[in-house]
Length: 401
Image (cartoon, rainbow, N blue to C red; front, side, top):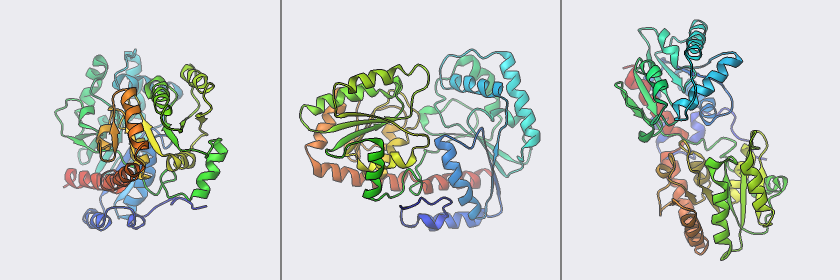
């Protein structure tokens, strides 16, 4: 079995990054050697942003940039407050009291006294550490890196937190449409995929087959795939309806894969009910940390669908395209930025549109191969971790010059 690179060095990306990209990054790193970069987040586990930092921090240190990653520590009540505040900033109406905001400031103050925040550039990720900026030193530059959609926050909450965002030297968003109006400079840094991670590494067919057998996904016919939570936002029922249109013309299977739902997972029950009437609808409950399993599913699928009604950047699209699969996606979040419609896949707005484009591809296998190859090259040039590293180096150079 081929193992993923646990702590990749920049040279390890020469075979997958665009030609000259690694040498270009090495030259930039040489000019920035000795500068100190500090990342601050709420956790080291669980999210795409965290996975990326796990890879970027060692590479930055390998380049000679003194890079550390600090973690905010808070009690259970603080974590609950942060979940509420985070949902409010993403536009869901929440009850946020003065006492909750006071607790937020107190925990930030406690952590500021404990954390090492003496970098040339301090990059604060998402909501939890936002208020640390009150304790910034005059000599350091501070950036708030917000990974979600801040275009329609809960007004009263944003009025309270906006002055803290204004105290940063810059704010970084994933998409222009996610950005909130601010007087400080705003930058756009798209999310990226790591081609050497367990989710995206090359995987032999025999290993793919082992994972598919373990997940009980039959291999007797081509299958369509959607990976995502079993909730309304990811529209698994809409994907099933699109598949039913396709099934009238093509003998394919649909695989819906996602983590086990939490309390109130009524959509999963509806999905399972729909699947019970069709043996070619395969519902897969993924294990914890299913990087290898998702890798195998994406590589074995003939077409990948990603049709959420709402989403953030939606980097699952780029992960599937990296594996040479055409993707049919919705127009939510950052999906239209990743898919070049008609070249690397299609963006659609309806169930009928998804079904039509799927049938079009299945009727033209040569088009599947051509779009898959174009998609992989598109991701290589625009959405790999090497491009992300270059964006962060550019920020470091610009803000600390």
